[in-house]
Amino acid sequence: MGRQLTELIEAAPWREAVTYRDTWPHEYVLSEKDDQRDLLAAVCARFHDRR
Image (cartoon, rainbow, N blue to C red; front, side, top):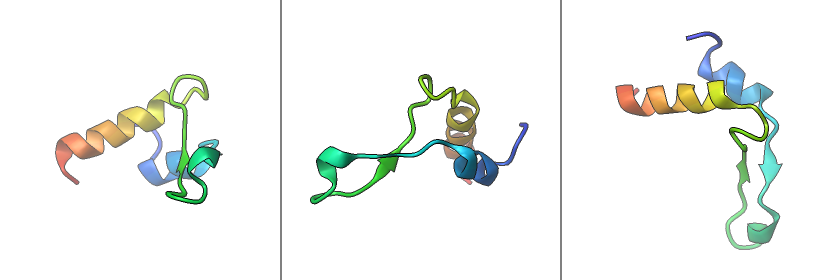
């Protein structure tokens, strides 16, 4: 399936969720806007395979 999931995660342009900075800090990736379809597919495959 191309690059490994960890490589896709490391290469992704993560964005800070600033509206939740104080209550639930986290980061996210926009799969289409940031052209991260391979990352989304790899995550979905991992959930599907339950790995």
